[in-house]
Image (cartoon, rainbow, N blue to C red; front, side, top):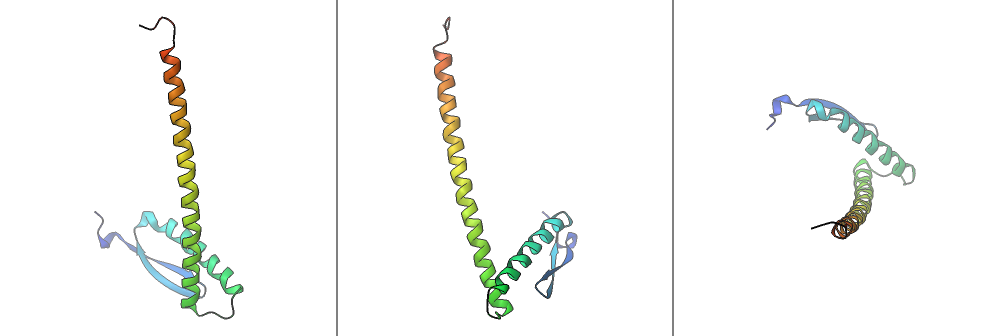
Length: 105
């Protein structure tokens, strides 16, 4: 288990505010990428809203990102189910072909 001493502070900018967040060095790039995505989403929402406060903008963005995530998760689950069904069908065909193979004891 990692200790807090291995974490390093990373400066993240959201809109015009800076936040220092501690993270493990191997998570730094992913955290910066996530913060960049969040900043872009917040800016998009701010452009379409009437002077929202930072807090309101953060909540709206969190809801928007959660909605995107849930839609992607549903898509992934559907694709996983179709893949599982397809593999089961192939397995069944393979078993049928092996059972009908001539010369099988």
